[in-house]
Image (cartoon, rainbow, N blue to C red):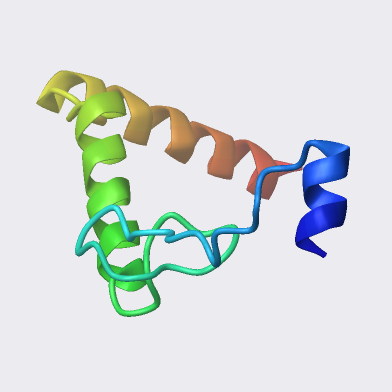
Length: 80
């Protein structure tokens, strides 16, 4: 096999490649960023970070306006 690889110009097989987890460094498996032990916690961290970046709290005035609009919609449906 070594002669064939040399003839074809292939690099010799060096064994399995290591796929370290992005959090702990252990082997993570194919198609994954985190190992099985870290996956749930990493998902929670990602969601918390996403929420922190993309959502903001409504001011009391904005919240009241949203609630009033929802009540109006409910009353319109009930009247029909």
